[in-house]
View 1 (cartoon, rainbow, N blue to C red):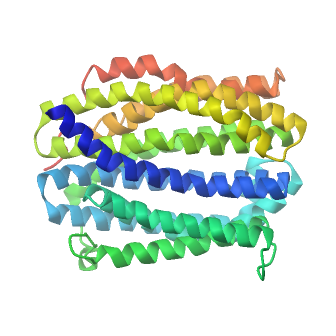
View 2 (view 1 turned 90 degrees about the vertical axis):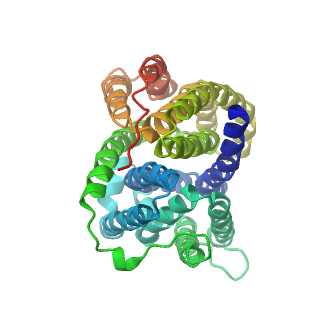
Length: 445
């Protein structure tokens, strides 16, 4: 009976969340594939410039993850006043994040692009993209707060519906503005940036309007400047380790991209495509991790620790199944992706090798995402991710990739394989830590 109840809850949440994650990732895919059909340099430059937004999502993710962890437990406890306080607290943090990245991208794009590549043409195109895309960064954090609250309050399907419309608008505007269809000008990379801004405006407006419907939660702005000291303390205790882990992981991943991009333009282009495919396939494990974490948090907040423990074990077991399924999908897509893209022969050979390497990397990625981000974090055990990333990414994978690329000058695919070491190497450590059950914590007051 418990098993059926768990599966029913998980499917109800995981499917819309996974689809939403897939839709969001498909925007980057649309940018890459459309620009790839237009010009290899435009595709590579936008992919590199998007690493800035990738870093931004680390900050956004820390805030929304902490809000989801605390919010799901207080929702399970049926403490609506505290849920509203969490809503307003997330909005405050997002205001700082959105404005900061808007200023960086709009006014200092060249220094940012210079960190990511030493190729002048890629820097020029990337700067043109960032100046426009920076305006979308003013909105993205706020919309993610609304999506988070909808998910924990039982409206994941509506959250997905909003994302569907926003993504479809983005893709349509991409097509019209990148290629210059009909009366629209052919803007290339700048067209991709304008499309992102327009879709973000529609998304945030719709989220705000929906939040005022019956049975939905909207922030009571009269409480916006209310200070709940204990809640801020709890929120910071959860969000800071998540932010630390996110930044360690995000900067590490950006370092991987920069290392490969500094080798040559063909390697940068191939890595851009491989990264998009990886992000698309990871949507399944992301959806299971988010949905499973919310269910786990509800049970812990309601005081049902035995049920939460059972759910955590089921999620851990499920993560391996998802990993092997993702490996199969990656291998099946490899010939289709390689043949579709307009790349040089060298870039195509790199892309084939990268896709095969990523196929086996997906096992570790899925297991760790579901177990660490889903079970550990939502059960209140947020520090483990920090330790594991410092050791496996920054003491093993990044130094090894740097040495192979710039000291020993190993082949591109050997360097790329080193950037995938961390996720696979963490699996035994994660399984040992799981058995300690430090993730069974009721965080409510």
